[in-house]
Image (cartoon, rainbow, N blue to C red):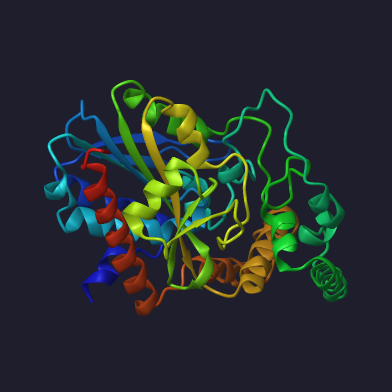
Length: 364
């Protein structure tokens, strides 16, 4: 099955497959090395493939690996596009920028978070200002990211979470847990207190286009929320916002959902990559979205993230259950199954092709 060849089983393989596909497609490639504490030279990179004229007024940015372990799906779509001739479908005034493995540490080490335990999709805010409060996370912090993972501790924690859900509902529980928090550095969905390496790197990638681009589209690939293999286009805007209306025009009302209205599979977030582009390209007509592919049921995904976070901070790589915990996390965000890959590829390609077609049509 040819589609299988687009997807990889580990970060190093995904990187080599992407670079090879980019070279064959005639892309210019720029490499950004991540040299964090304890990391060896030549291991971790964010790679960028550039296609189309440098001075184009239209820009489409495709990002994989914002959440590390989620990068396998987005990488597969990027590789498939390169191999199937996306360069030939670019108009004469369109630049395509593919950012592969924005969080290479998480991608390589099967973590959703980066080398600082930061969730990149909560990190793109002004760190000179006060951080958003998440008092409801504070109330549940010791059960969301526990120090003990004993049977008794887990039963007690799940009971507290169940009681919270029964009292307040699923939507409020999801918002409390995943909205983002800035008070618990070893917790889940931690936004950090400084601009991370990946944050600064993305700014370097986009800097050349700050003044020359008049229309821009951004698709940030994610996995882990929603029905198995279904791709939802997610925006952080009201439904009457021009960017939301453009997204509906590009991809259709059925696929496009807003976190503000509560219809999306995602909670409403702060400090996202999508929001960062509004600051980086303030003069462009911007349509920035997340493309989220569903995998497993939400509680299964949550338990996988929770267990891996405990392993990272307290259990250690020598823990007898370490491999099982890592594989559970991988499966939660990358079901290595033909049907899932086919769904991700077909929808990912369609969403990108629709974005290119609409980006190259002048707004009336």
